[in-house]
Length: 281
Image (cartoon, rainbow, N blue to C red; front, side, top):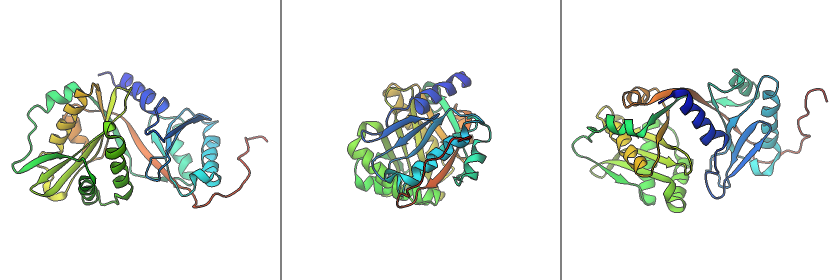
């Protein structure tokens, strides 16, 4: 795998030319940025890609803030500008923070060829007493959300709505699986497909504390790789935490960039203001 070529392909397919995520999602391409806007409150809303430099970045940030503060469609939304360490200008994150965006913890963009993952995980086995179950209904979604909250210590309210929407309205775009110890879920993970691209994304792989270090996460990566291969995808993509990065590296994943979300919550009601002026006006 040529990392530079794969990163360029990732940027093109999943960022610059990203298709709408759902039938009700809109992609806006204006002023050097690509923005996704979904109809439902749990739909992801934010900047997927930008083509900016030192002379255009501040105006682009101001334009997004103006939309968030004044457009009724944006009222109350959580908005994410998803930056990557190879984006320009190099100080884009600092500019976003200065404008009022809040940075989240950075994660490492890691990508692997599915065939290599399949080869390196051929011997991946679940520990005794653990079985995998696909999530196909609301009860399964509830268990997956509960695992997320236990594993990561954060609310799964929006994720719960998103997963329920996926398995009921867009079943062909997602695969969600639970690792069960008897009747108790101990790990949950999902994979999202992006039709028309070479990439399937691994998301939400979390194991409750008592079951970590037993090979469950590795087995779920192998399980999802086999599913992705059967759907004809070439690459697996992960936004990896510090905990999962060493495991993924051993499974053939290469670090291509660092991604940092910058969040801004729009006011609950639109405020009428004049549009931002270009410098010199």
